[in-house]
Image (cartoon, rainbow, N blue to C red; front, side):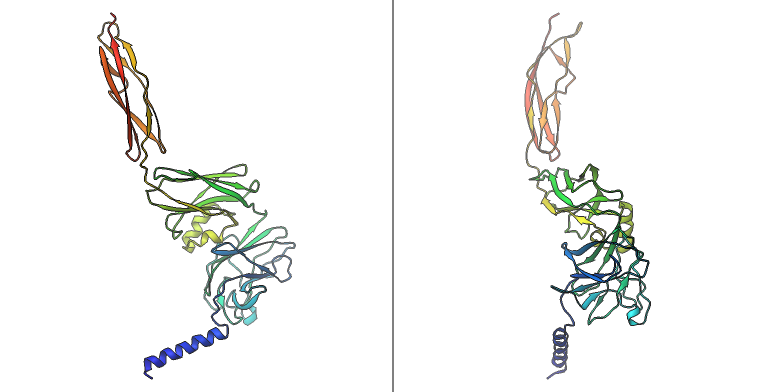
Length: 363
């Protein structure tokens, strides 16, 4: 056997051995273990929200900093600590327990040893130590978020609120069917109730599958939120959804500059709406135009002409402007003149109609 064949044989044997012993399990975080609620360690199955997992707990007693722990792990019907997401170091391996940097912020994983702060770093074969939390306040809600990573370090966050976040009842857009390239799309959400102080709702949309995105705060009236997506070029695929967060838009943008990843928007989310999307189409529909009836006018005193104004009306799937030849307000000579009105939309589609202006000399 040549050296190259022997090398690949060794690699294959190593991989098979790792898989056989549970070394590289292709699993994602499914469970949270924590003392956050009352100081007693409990496990909670995470809810799958697509690209990340989440669970929300309400504390029933106060807890000082460093006294309440946390860790994420795999497992089906029960937790499996063999593969977990927690700090590399802590009191379990002779180091100092590490606390997360704070609540209400996305926490990027750190690979340092000893760990400089608490984060969701991947550990295999039961490695790592439980992280710890900042001070816990009785009655507050703690939302644990972690990215749905397969055998990788993961972004995480713990969101602290003094309210139970509202859920999304519905999301809708207008136009509800075909979206033309000229259309601004209005998005409306209905929340399960009035928002609490400090509870914000945002619209997030993207034209590249959320590799990049734009986030705007929705304007709330009662439990209804509204925001708009600007008109896009024909053929643009737009995806969007809404999310709620305890963070202001300024705080979100500042964190995005620090963490530099779109996963930030998942990590600082309390609740999500359903997602929606559309593809813009070219506007090839002509406007509709209606001319006024024929116009009659008399010459002005001491003159053989008359100044005449008129107006046609136009409708369009987007919007249209109307021009005239001759223009409204022009001076017309005695006799009949044909006026042509033209409606033009943003895509250059046109429609025309005509009428006559008849000027009589009755002097």
